[in-house]
Length: 254
Length: 234
Ligand SMILES: Nc1ncnc2c1ncn2[C@@H]1O[C@H](COP(=O)(O)OP(=O)(O)OP(=O)(O)O)[C@@H](O)[C@H]1O
Ligand SMILES: [Mg+2]
Image (cartoon, rainbow over all chains, first blue to last red; front, top):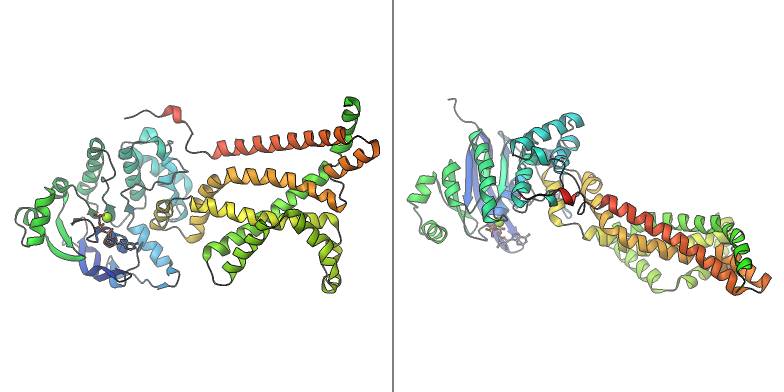
């Protein structure tokens, strides 16, 4: 195996909401094909961190690099300046949301094909065909002409994953992809994510599914009050947490 | 009631339809364009412009349409600057004044309706578009617009009907629209009941056609209801 290259790296990322400091100097690097899971208690800043990576939130400071190239971003009174570079970062790091956020006014197929057509500039026929292939891959080939509201939560989330894959992403971001699902639907979504991990996708994931995190992760990061309190392999973190906070947290969720 | 007389009025009244409909269509068009600008100004909350837009809406919603119409038709000519301006040949025209008054009035209501539609779109829908690299324009065109139109359509259908009825006010400034002709016929034949019942019937038919068209459009856009019968749990 060749030496792993860094796909996504973050240095000293910080973020405040008003006077509330939510993220403190977070640094992290995801190598190609790595699955990194972020855990931590509610309000510890997991979502905010993920959202900073594709600039849905504008960090107060810190560098984001994709494939070794730093991404320039700046904001003014109206918020982030949505430059070509920012848009390129976003298409490279598509987000799978907790509440799916599929566009309600289009079929699932159009949900998957629309960004490739309008943002990546793919020919319509090609994008539609690829959307179909991806929907087949997540088990929704039969339902590609359905509207989101006609699907179960698990199906919607699988469609949302297909939408992310259609971007030909450099890394995938998942923010609690199964937290909004009925318990019996969690498995089908986790199975798809597991397959993506096995297929070598680089992924950053926030989850409360600890068993799953242990199985798929290469590295687990424990966030506590906006700081990386501990990070390591799943075995290190889950079996022998070094910090009191991580031990407490794990005891409370397991 | 004299039914023969009433029926004989119908073709004469129908001759007024082009005037009524042209006032309706033109004022709705002004309402849409100006309403969109007002809505944008108010939602952007840019200083001064937003306050001006707020005041505009307050003013046109808070005063009677008839008063607005009279102010424009009878009032503006009082000013020399207006009489000397390039717009005077238009502002002397009753038809144009009616379109202007109705259009300015409709803009205020339309901007509110648009705002309601836009606010109805879930934050997550926009956020997903941002997360997938859409530009601001693409978000407006591909996500926000289509969904906001869907939410705004029922109110806008209502606004169209209100405007249709509002066009009747044009008859007060000597325009021979449907109502103008009805007034003439009523005076000519001493038959107010027959003439206004006939006119009312025509308005009713128009309102029904409009309502049916809007609900047909609504059905087409109603993604929530489509193919519901095909859904089977998995
Ligand atoms: N837009 C915002 N404005 C103000 N405060 C915010 C905003 N978004 C998040 N916060 C605050 O930032 C902190 C971190 O929130 P965040 O959503 O990142 O936590 P989380 O770790 O994802 O929690 P959870 O497990 O509940 O999803 C919280 O205190 C939250 O209240
Ligand atoms: Mg969260």
